[in-house]
Length: 354
Ligand code: SF4
Image 1 (cartoon, protein in one colour):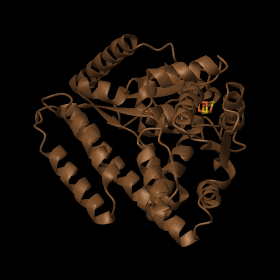
Image 2 (cartoon, rainbow, N blue to C red):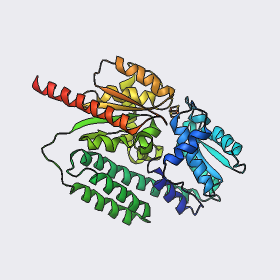
Image 3 (cartoon, rainbow, N blue to C red):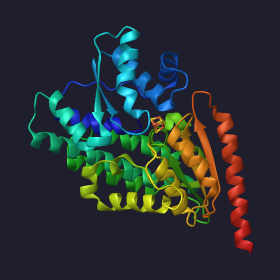
Image 4 (cartoon, rainbow, N blue to C red):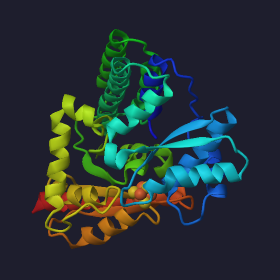
């Protein structure tokens, strides 16, 4: 999922664990996942199943997969995927479900402890902190990239720098190198030639966690919006998810509360996944963004609820819901984005002339 592999790899390496990183999510991953999944399941299930199969081909026999008693089907992923893998011939595999809904971060850390020959808590926390530092550095560079993409003169420059920066962060072995790499790439992004005259449209990208964070599942929608001169704002970053990161960054926890409070007049409780947050983000940002792109996996119940509530809020802002599944085609998506951006530009001109 996005650049998460860099942070987890750093953590497992520091704990001397033998780990496998599957190839980046690709058409092959999707084809494998689709072939072996029940048709009606959501795209995150299919893509992660494809990832598991590709990891099995590289020799992995144990997987860590979020699980728990949450309201959506994420809770069934680990068991269902283990069953499918065994059915298609990987009889020796073990998919370890991490109880993210009840245990959050402590569930992950306890599982890592049991798989790391009982490493000391000190070692585990220190390895986790290093992984989290890498995640935070990548997220900060990504935020910068979102701004530069919208106004850069040569389209694609900022995205290429980000890809290179993530590679170097992946190779950084200590805090000093990590800091230096981040500073270096932040400076390079700051020096990208831009059109100073443009006041870019601002579009929030919201929706289900996985499709928002894994570019393959949305045809890298943020880069496509950047090519159309749009500055993307996204409140979901992996480094903001963990409880421990809340300790280092109390703003992240407050932001989550703020989003829930904004949704309250329309939706008073968690409906699973990120449905509650999607409604809250629409309400919260109606006055500050030009538009919102809502990413929802096809058949995702929490986002279906959010999608039906959003048009009825009194806070008015255009929302384009994009349903992500294996049938989605890039040309169709780009055409819809172009029409949406055109609409937002006209709306801004109208408001300016009033
Ligand atoms: S939130 Fe939606 S897409 Fe994500 S796992 Fe749950 S049902 Fe599937």
